[in-house]
Image (cartoon, rainbow over all chains, first blue to last red; front, side):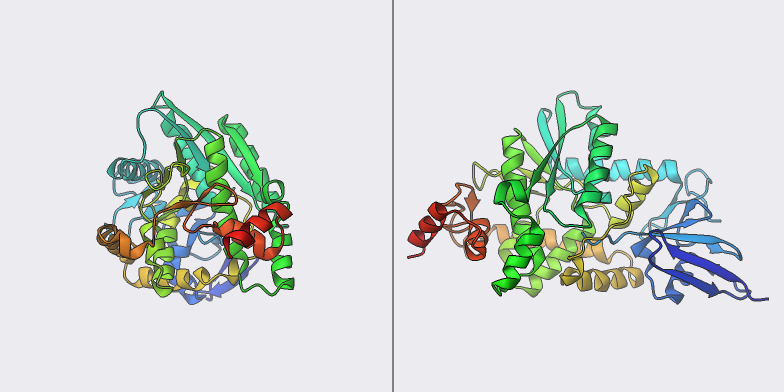
Length: 71
Length: 327
């Protein structure tokens, strides 16, 4: 079964749907898959702030808060 | 689930150098200890101060304001005020200004807003337009940086500040360090010290950076955990800046080799202490007083007055004075 995780930037500027398969994948690895660096985002999983070593599962909702604000 | 190394509650942060994980409560304690240690180590404040916090309305400066107000409750002779410089950037500043006013009211802090329009007669958007029409070789961030620093010092002094605190974090500092190495700007590297100011010129307000050793990821997390994270609005000029690329490069290095940023900071502190011993070679001449506006300046005429002259946004009297000095 293919599992899909939805990730979005908090301001709604970008959204990704990533199939993670059956593997146990960490937040850091998930971000790597879409070319993002874990030190540039604070990650909220299902409404809770989590560390980059947190495991991501099917149906999790991931919201990214950019650390890099540019201004 | 990753748990806190201290209490087994769910972790919100991992310090990748020590490997320690922190829950919300222990992260905030870790953050507080780290900032207090920085303040003590660099002797940023005395027992009696009027501390003006330079606030942009972004997450770092709102966090600094929030943190300093809380800290000041433990120091009876500290007064905290906030100062926001309104450059006049449409689609950006009006939103961050709202957040600024809301947080100041919530914290019960006195604040002041000083605008480019009020002091220079033009907003940054208008200045950038004039600069482009006149084909001046400057980027938006150059005007903004010069005019903003100028007003921060002048207005903080007028507010009676004994010290001006800015929210520059470890990431900002090492990025600026790299930019100045690329540009061979050693005089600017000296000014990246955690405390700078009053000894150089009586009109300079002492400046401190309490987040000097705090990662941007940590200040962001502090802002989120305290409901200070603003609506994410990016300055429209940010991508014109070389900082954007340097930041990405340093962050890639940090991801692969945790500790890179602290290592760069140690190099910076070392080179500052070496440069301090050779100040005459690095900084040409004493800090002067600008012949036009009377503010501290590296040259006979300060950068802000020079920009105003080149842009043609200066009154006739000052323009004549500059032309006299430049003869």
